[in-house]
Image 1 (cartoon, protein in one colour):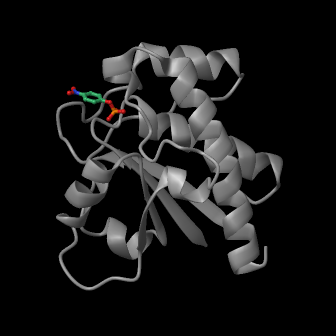
Image 2 (cartoon, helix red, strand yellow):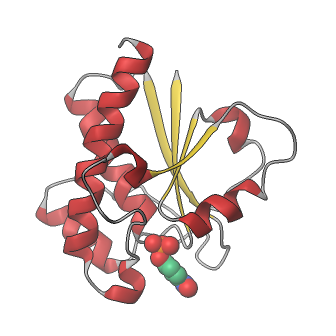
Length: 156
Ligand code: 4NP
């Protein structure tokens, strides 16, 4: 099983959006038995909460399930459980690293690293921008590229 963990700050806007979009694509491509998907936040303020209503609304527009998503914080064991720790921005990369307790093989990356032709390197946080459409478009485009990368890397 290949593990993919999406990470943002609060785990209510960007990373649950990426989790929902990515697992939808994984299911569409019949890869549910090969890839497990989760998300977490570096902060602890929203633990146990459903995604932000803006994230829920944009996922509803695109008919992507999100009802079971609840926020949780990154934990040390994530670095053993997940191969790809896919962060939304550079702060998330720095903060996520601080949860790792020992040497690990997880690949700590930014989601937009998978999209070469995109000038933005950090996924804008709609908690502050209010623009859930922009974030959704970036998440969708880069999740598609990430899945392509994983399929090639693991020959699945
Ligand atoms: P996220 O957005 O990291 O995309 O989930 C945020 C959500 C909540 C807060 C900050 C960012 N907050 O400060 O509560």
